[in-house]
Image (cartoon, rainbow, N blue to C red; front, top):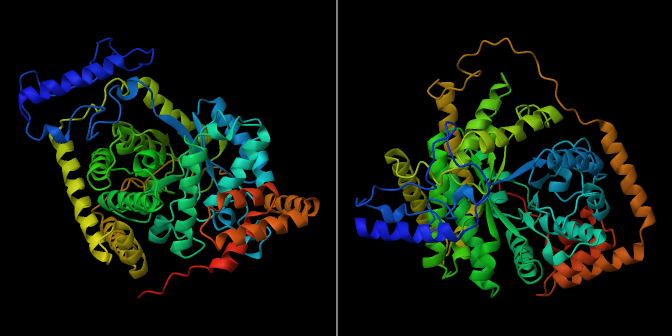
Length: 557
């Protein structure tokens, strides 16, 4: 790009920056030196390929979505939390919000993630252990007691039974007297990544996609601020993928959901802004920053060129980041504080919109109050003390970083082409479904995980406290343990609720939901009525399993 075009771009950026709202904050260095809000090539200088880097707030958004960077608004601190029963988790949420958290992120226990009630025989021993137990809308009432859902953005990390859980959330908001149309938050819902990596599905892919399409339609019409899909690369990376695989598989899944919305007759300029993303921030500092920058650029280009998006917001890739759980070690767990800080800083320098920082003890158990506070304070130290919020994309133009960004983008494009080849009609959706059926994704992730593990065992990749610097004076940590009494109490409360509700109303609501499932009508209203009647998660998912069947992954050797 020649000097004149670069200068014209800088002038456009300056006009947008001047017109944008900025925070009332000190944007100087620790020593008091004034810094510019963005940096680029020197005046009068050309820069080959600068159109791929650009200015913050301009296509292709490599350097961020907003001309102000974090001078306009910092990322949302959204700590993922949930354990035990709804009352215990409610107390943790109030602690997070009081300590400066900007939103909530709900972790559910394994029975809930699998669409089972707490008193299901297959739930035994798992209730409340890896998240909060939610059996019906009444649990949601307790979970958000004293928390104004109309004013609190709420993310929920659940995919298989995401839609009935969403309906219970809406019912809890209704019971608070909230204006449903004003709710804001994110539901994960991403079923593709379940078949690819996490394995928490209920039905065959097609019924899941039908429910996701219904949810997209409903939110576009009724709750325009709510984001019905958080396309998740986090679990793909945690399963052992490379950074480029995480990026490519995640964005391919996103393109699949765009194709789903278009197949429903939705306007891409209306529904695409409701798609958000969820990435892993791993320990390779510069590779992760490059991954985030490449993600925005790829998404903007494909949405514009392949799917016809014309509005700026439809081209924006907004994403939440969580530091890498798989990078945490049980050996010398205090070292995890350092790992988390480095990973969080990479997410921030990559321009994340919201962030969760893992606690030092999460490789051993759910976080204690103290370790959860350290994780929260890690974000606040980065935000308040380091100065990284003063300049948009401060590493932009680095020879190393730009080369990494281009390399990861090129690898992702090669993977997209292969996925399209897998499908008979050349669409991303057909390729994803064929890749799931053939085990293509899981095989490639397994190969990457194997290569990395071999490098660790040979000492080529070094992990402090594991295969390097193993001596320590640290003492054993005290960890949070969820009492078996939680399961006993949850099952007692569930039994009470079942005996107190109107069984006729529950049966009628469940029957109506099945009737609608046999038509092409949107299922959200019928499912909402089942939630209002206090039908349990297991009952709602159970009648749909009876109707649609369940999915079992084929054995592969």
